[in-house]
Every structure is written in structure tokens, then in C-alpha cells.
Image (tube, rainbow, N blue to C red; front, top):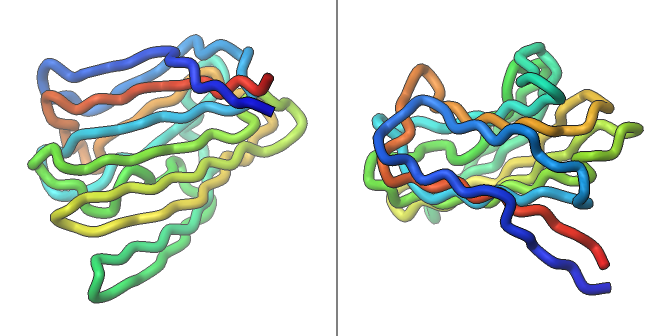
Length: 166
């Protein structure tokens, strides 16, 4: 069965800003993928929130993250959080990080939503993340925000794709 990635929207920041939002996401795909390239104003991470009609800021997120830099590795978990800690454990200011997020079965209204992510930064290592949004609502809005009011740097890009199964 062939699978097609269809570009839905791209945002390239012309100046630094704290968040990027994709809204009015069509419900015509099986899954969504977001590709990120960029950085933050200060060493930190970008978190993700989703919702239906508005961003869910409640304690409905949980996840597990593993990180490594070639010489050491660690892991962490969070539950009943107000966001998913995604897009890097240490994104720096060099616009050198990239990440891919997979939103599985985003339009299914009978299951919680799984979000898988992998982020790479040549300066800081690799992170893999498995998250859960504990809601059966379809996702039609995704927001990425720099933690602790960090700005996402100018030139950073976010591209949203829909995956359509034939």
C-alpha cells in the first residue's frame, strides 16, 4: 500500500518568536508529520501542545525521553504534564537542530493520540521521545513553544505534512 506525504503548511520565521502554531488542520489524512530545522535563543527545548479547536493546556500529556551524546545517555519521564517535551533536550542558538514528529491516528476519535519524535543537534546529541495526549478528540491544532519563554530563532522552519494511505 503506497503512502504519500502531502505538504500542508510551512512556517519559516523571519524573526525570533516564542511559538509557532498550525491550526485548522484538515482531518483527511491518517497521520501527520512535522519536520523542524532551527534553534532557540538560549540552550533549552521546544515543547508541543495539541488540541481540538484550541490548544489543550491541561495536565493531559505524558511521555518518555531518552537522550545521548555518544559518551553518555539518560532518560526521563513525565506524566500529567501541561505539554510534551519534544524537539530536543538541548537545542542551541546555532540553528543546527532538526527534528521529526509523528502524530499517529490524529483524527481518530476513539483513541488517545501517540506522538513520536526524534531530534538531532550536532552540538548536543540525539533525543528520542514517545508521548501521549490523553484525549479522544481529533487534533486540529498543534503549537510549538520555546520553554521558559525562550524564542525560536529567526530562520527556523516548521513543515507540516499529511500522510495519506492509498
